[in-house]
Length: 392
Image 1 (cartoon, rainbow, N blue to C red):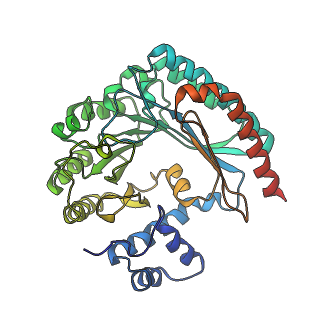
Image 2: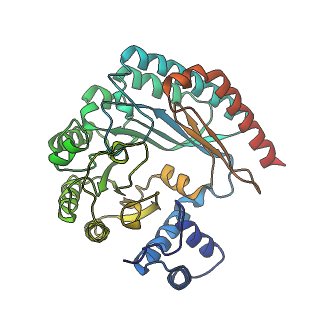
């Protein structure tokens, strides 16, 4: 079976399409050249061009304004660790309430210090993403405290977008959802709508729990909800993917992210645990089926790939009109700085004419707290150096 992306390598295959469009090549010619010169499958070539055009339109209001940045806030706790996951996270058994409270105190300290440094450097926060882990492992009062601290940052130009990953339904209740402003983009991520699969991957909720959590969020007034699904989880077939997607679309979310399974080195699936891998042919069939179901209601707006991704395919974000996630686009396009706070959070600073500056906080929450004064000092220095170079 041919490679869907030909000889294109790396996480962001759409960058080549974007660069050719920026040079003035017509969209049809860009797709044609991706097929002839790089061996990209025609369907993927057209997809890359479509997404590149969409992202250009989304980013147009930010063009030329390097002082605009995004912030990622890491809450590295989960009720349990999913078998496919390699994200930095700690179980609630390991980090009970007192330890989570200590983490929150340190996180708020970093947010305050970073906000002050941003203000001193003339940076403006336009996008906020609170992820993890599972941020709704925090108590309702802790969520309120965190969001109050973020809202008090002196560097908001105009809140363009804020996302809160509610993630797993087994961490949600009315009190926690009520602590989140209704204009936040909410993410409720089932990964599958089959109970047998949820059990196999270590989830502690059912498909019914997903539907009930979604209904509760709607009842409370949230009108921008994303849902994630994974293609290729143990034992699933293309028909299973289609059934999950139909159930998700019946809920009418504003966006859906379709992830192709990719075995991570730090996950249980790469640690010798037996699992039934979907064939490349079935992965292509599942992808085609998913697209046929998503197309009538949504359009693709961002795409990235990962190491050893199933079928050599892609992860794709789909959205209803004007419901695209700006944070996701900024991350993939790498056009603006992203400042990460919390354990495992990464920061990237685009220095004109040079390689991007990167900074990573330790993944372990205890080590993060231990090194916090040093991390704050490093981030202040990087922000200052970035802005000085940008102004020169």
